[in-house]
Image (cartoon, rainbow, N blue to C red; front, side):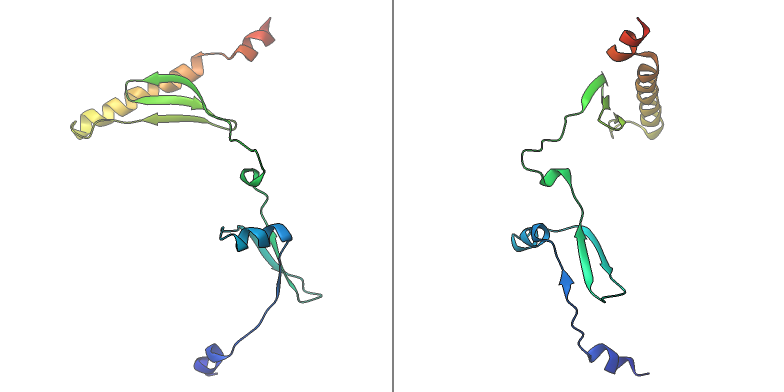
Length: 124
């Protein structure tokens, strides 16, 4: 089989888009989703992912800062606890590594040893 002839052939396929996906495409936005072919009808369907950020008036909830260190923080988001630690790059590597580990341990201990208001109210 000659591949050069195969690549020169043009193939036309029709893809079904929802009106919302087509509107996003026409405004120049990238659209994420899945594309599947129905084996019975041989039609290709595109299903756009439903992202909350596309909803009008949606504002992402801010992360709650639980604790701060000299160059790091512990935050709580809707789904996760986040730790950020940094060290000055002028330090020696060993000292910077020690500082990062010390701050990470301090933040982890704070997370382990503190209770939220809901936990305190549940105990009462």
